[in-house]
Amino acid sequence: MTIAIRTAKTADAAALAGIYLDCRRAMPYAPLAHDDAAVRAWFAEALLPSAQVWLAERNGEVAGFAACSEQDGARWLDQLYVAAPHQGAGIGRALLAQALSGQAQACRLHVFQANAGARRFYEAHGFQLLGLGDGHDNEERCPDALYQWLPDTKE
Image (cartoon, rainbow, N blue to C red; front, side, top):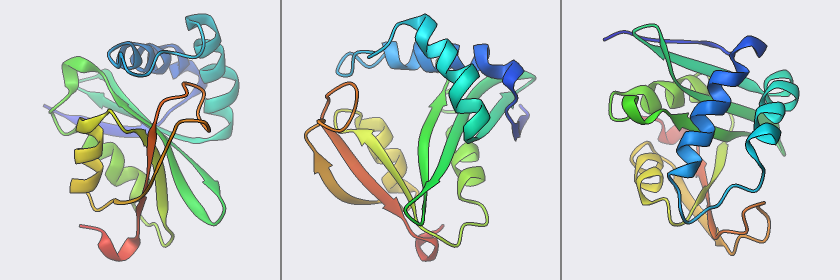
């Protein structure tokens, strides 16, 4: 099994949007706020042109992605999704390592409170819970959790 991480390109938008949509449909506690066409357009026209996006390939197949932005003196991990057939194979860990590599500043993220697997994953990789929200700040209106990683806690 070979995992390769590379910068995502506009031509990857459909594959990444497909992973996102499949993963989000597996989250019954957080219904999608937009239809498929709007999500696919957002990937192609907004996310890929404006964020740092890395794509993971496993044995030549697109397996997952991570997207980061910079705000308020911190890096934000805005997206990290791994396609179901590739979960548990180290893809998420590899993408997170890429997102955190060379970081001299904090990295923050929001995750749905009900997403226990993601919360365990981030906590296992040094992220600390900063607070819980009622969901009024996210499109899905689902309770969320704010996490932060600091460089000195890096594994």
